[in-house]
Image (tube, rainbow over all chains, first blue to last red; front, side, top):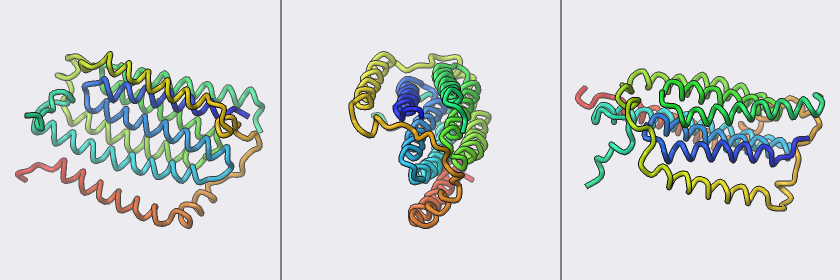
Length: 100
Length: 171
């Protein structure tokens, strides 16, 4: 009978760490990994509420989020490869092609 | 049904493992170490799912996240030359501003979660849930049939997009 707030605070901690990673790191690969961590934090919430309400809808949503994370990782890593081919860097603040 | 102390022990073990691995992932200098710590955090989350009796999601998490997405990440780490980036500054110039904003965000969310609302005062029921993989399948293929098909199209688009991005322009 673990209170559901425990899961929410775990999810909150993972989300906050992920946001720190996205905002502060320069390496785009670590930024993508932090995004995966954020999506994972959302899934913990969904599964905890799914168990609390005794229905499986939250689990189905979590499956969709995992699908989305897979698609996002594939496209993101493709973009990283294309950027590395063009600019020879993986640092986010050196990618300034759109700046004028 | 496992006794209560065991439930708490399970939860706090996996929760602590997930948080420690996540922190080490964000502050690490070597990207391969970051990937390994992210795998640790994802496996710990899989443990949380198991503790919440979501067996199907537990196995999907391990097969798809750890076995699929993380292999993709490690593959790209091998393809991209990271030696130059590892020797440079790891955090961007807006580090302190970003940390401040994150603390504000975390404080807001914590304030919301601590409010006296009926949802947040609930507990995870102690009664053992029946094995619910079949229910997930029924829900996925009946109630959520349309989103399921849309997700498959999205995966196809993402696959084509990833191939197109990674392809050499002149080839």
